[in-house]
Image: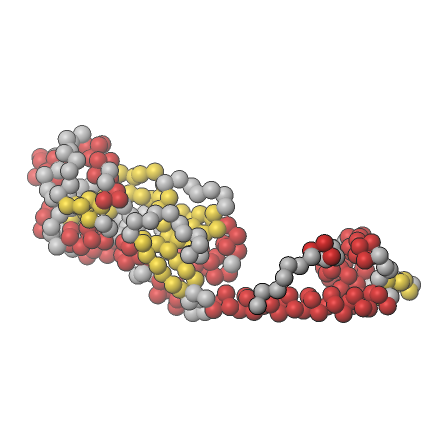
Length: 318
């Protein structure tokens, strides 16, 4: 049952309690200061604050030592009990937090086609850190209430209250089955005639990709889906051209089951990265995950293979 409110006006100066406790235990203000990494005058000031607040003397001097008075002994028992109780409570909470999984937020495609393939390696390197990965299809903002860290896209560097570790650029790269575009891809003009797959949350990406080519693009994709993961599956089946926005088909490109449909890459503002509250980065588990994930990405900030050269036939159709 919840207790009533505390009359905070009756509390002594809480910052002074550590200096008082150490001075009683060591019977020396100087040794207490050394233990707490404070100056001798700082601990003396803490004791004076307590004495002024309580209206009693807490110590008497005996040469270089300080000896608690009767009031000092009485107060010490309560202070020590309170500090011990706080330490016990804090350790219980820390222990509970250590057992709770590290909550990671990302999007469907980033989770399935990039992050999930890397998480087993992190667990192998950090077997004491449990992970909980949650995915979302449409919400792009980092949900700090329900996640400790996020692997997300940010159009601009987040505000200072967030720690941001860039991973790779937001690059628009058209990919397709070689059965649809051949091993060397096609020209931009021919690409515009193929079934283009768009994601409804990124409706303008094809416009951004075609703009530098000078090719008149109708702006009406043949197919609209809700995630890049779906678009890539359709591209693998030879049903259209998907427009990647990150390294989410690296394995397929390396294996040749997908090819870059055109060598042009358009880099958009912002990029992919790991985000968390700045104060959360001090947590051992959060820091371990953020630093480890960053170490898996090449310094160049991209995981895409080099763009192929268009073959003679494709260049003629450009």
